[in-house]
Length: 205
Image (cartoon, rainbow, N blue to C red; front, top):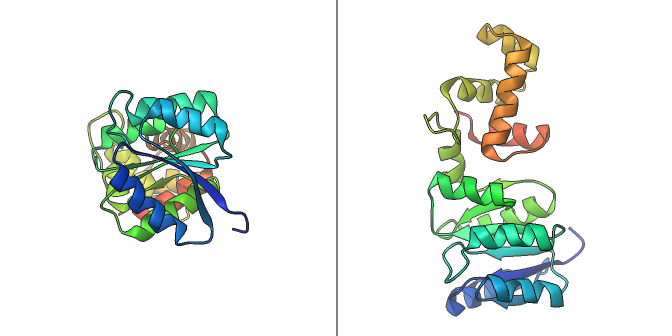
């Protein structure tokens, strides 16, 4: 990436923001242009500064990070939001993606994950920490997670198979395979086919 990515840090712990700023500004491709301790202040800062990406915590006093993400999506649709949180429950991830976040990174993930996440999101992709991606791909009974059949389809997608090939392998109609693809993308908050294939390759078992 040739252009500097301008970042707004949103976390109600100043020490956390200080640590993030030091880590990010050690790399020439990132510039922290502003910080905020809550949603209202974050929106004010975004109006004052040129911001490409918001690094958003979930647990904050007052408006939480998921609600703040929805506010950013409405007020500043051009700004990408990346969640950085200690919460590793799938429901938090689903809520964040539905609110408009482009990714979700755990605070205890390796430092390089934040760098990869920011660059992935700014390239138009969606990023999940590896531990979260594995959870999202596991077959569960909950509506926002994959069924065992969708998990099978995901494995075939990871192998580079077409809808026709998957239909033949699983004894399904092509239309049914297409429906499974759509459902997988909806549940995981994935938009494009390229992003679906990337997710499948990284996470299908």
